[in-house]
Amino acid sequence: MSCGVDEAGRGPVIGPMVIAGVCANRNKLIELGVRDSKKLSPKRREFLAGEIRKIADKVVVRVVEPEEIDAMREEMTINELEVRIFAEVIEKLKGDEIFVDAADVNEERFASDILSFLSYTPKIISKHKADDIYPEVSAASIVAKVERDRIIGKIAGEIGDFGSGYPADERTKEFLKEYYEEHGELPPHVRRSWKSAKRILKEKGQKRLDMF
Image (cartoon, rainbow, N blue to C red):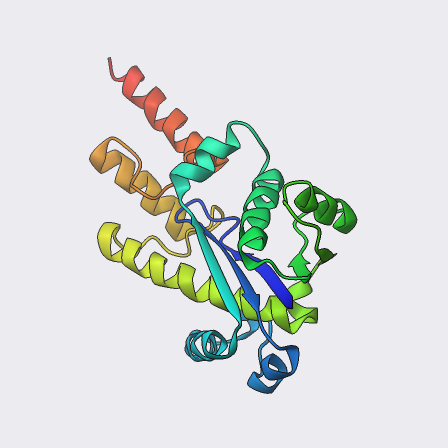
């Protein structure tokens, strides 16, 4: 059984990272027209995610909340975090052949690191831009992206429009600063271990000290 694993939301300062695994017949996925989720419209992704679930032998979705990311980042890099969660998803998939989108600059090392956390020994094919190469990974990227978008929609409804959630997004930067100024703390769902969040805490905290 061949499977693909990919993530959505590795870089944002707001919201979870979602890692999905999909085991499905490659020919059926090709017939569906799966491709890298970033190259699909939201409507098309939604449709394909539903179709993928219908034909898949197995789908596993793991949501890594900001608080968990922050806790893990105290002990490891973001690449090491991905290795652990990819392994966790693969353990549940129990596929014989696993295609993964490599987070490490060294593709082989990424595969080897994942294998070290598994209780069995599948064949792992680790490639950069795997979501553009292997239909199984394209399917996983679609499922992960749709699930993360659903969660982000709920978060926006709770705390307001924060833009894309990426650190370089001007709207996101302004939102975080304005929220902190109004509430004296960062909003929920923020990855406090990210540099952009730490910077706001440092700058705003210093301003408050300067007021005394």
